[in-house]
Length: 137
Image (tube, rainbow, N blue to C red; front, side):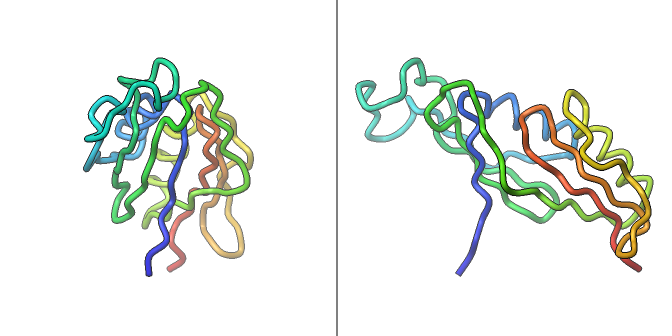
């Protein structure tokens, strides 16, 4: 059994994946547009979605994340979860936190906690919440 994260960006998936590529070194392993689907029928696609992302897979470190433009409404609503990004060093944690926070909103600044020498929470420009922390020694 395997559980994976699947993010719906409602029309901003390609923009989000490019942002993650720059911010956290994401690597796209697969990307299919609605018009590329084997049984592509424009009448069954969201309006103006032919060039939008039907399905995408990308890796951040060792983790695979799935994503799509979904119904292409242009209004992503990503709530009720956070992606936890664990790194071995504080300098790397601060760099990634700043990169993810570009155009987003800090929810909890990076600080020392009882479980990590540095931990913070930031919502990126797409509304995805990231908990960035340094591995406990």
